Image 1 (cartoon, rainbow, N blue to C red):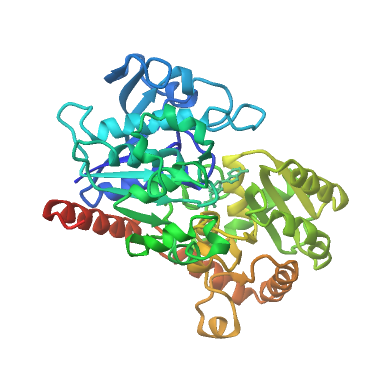
Image 2: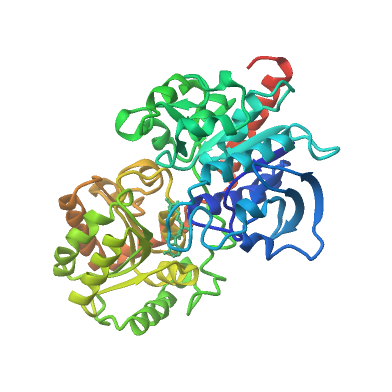
Length: 485
Ligand code: ADP
């Protein structure tokens, strides 16, 4: 079975969040199950820099949304890639979606409509001798692929739209519609029209043969107005085609036994070696070395992640005797508030603003717990890395966080099954109570190391999830063949 995966970020070539981790790791897991994945990715500078001098050209555009473009094929990092080299859209400084100052590019609609147009062309046969059996689009940046397929007269393969975060929808003014190259009938309630404008994700959800999101709980949550972000009505209508499939993690990239970013490597059997990683952090950040619980945060500093709640409770948490290391970037006001907290609590709180892959590994390998107070969390990966690294996850009970962490309540502790701590989302009180609970559990070394070891042994690899994707792909392919849509 051949799958065309369409994504705006893929680890390790370009990453702004969990989406890249998933699109980078899933092809390997599917490959082991007899599904070959070709991943289509925009030709950002960081991607183009990795290509060989003479990359293999597969298709040409004399004019793709206002400029020349080429489709290139390459094998990088074990991934079979199709790269859209469109300098007028992607050869820019900054990140995947914005300028170096962090503002979104004003023509993002055009960048990702063009990307999706080219992906649809591939799905319809632009590469001689290759047609995918399934088109798998990730998030709003790839969603228009499915709209282009839907409004094309040629037969198209069945498709899956995966929602990694419903908060990002790619919503634009109605005035862009004329430039998308879609028939006028597409500007309709059951097409790309969305609250008077054009909705890219909405269009993909409408057109997809099946919809997936990244945890069973989030798949339920997004049918309600409070999590549906305006799309709950449409998602409710498509509920029979909606599946919640948990993300796994790349257990090669995230392995405490071999991780080059750690000061000391370890397994569940040699947990004591973790102490060297904690010491490395204490020295690097001049933290008090007093044996108190050391927590970490590795996160976008945003409202979704509950970072405003966390920062407002930091003084109380420090009062409970814990230390906290924060790595993240995002809202400037939150960045400033975390820096101010570090200045107030020298030795107890450290804030590192920025993106640092290596430090994120060392934090998982050296701190006692990772704190994830999200208001909503489609799946969340950092709690999974925490489990794998013996860094106990302390999480808000929502989305994938609820699905992957077993709360250390009385019953779970006495049954010996707890792997972390859960608390009610969106509440400073609940967060502080969870930290109080943590300090009590931490004192009992048997309970604490039991949680660490169980987490490390939990199966959070891609194997089980990849099987669910394969059975979905196969059922769609069968429906297509038998004409039962
Ligand atoms: P989201 O995709 O919503 O940001 P996830 O938990 O799904 O959240 O994925 C976040 C990914 O980004 C994880 O791999 C995490 O380790 C990484 N990450 C987040 N912030 C930073 C940072 N400041 N430095 C390094 N890695 C980070």
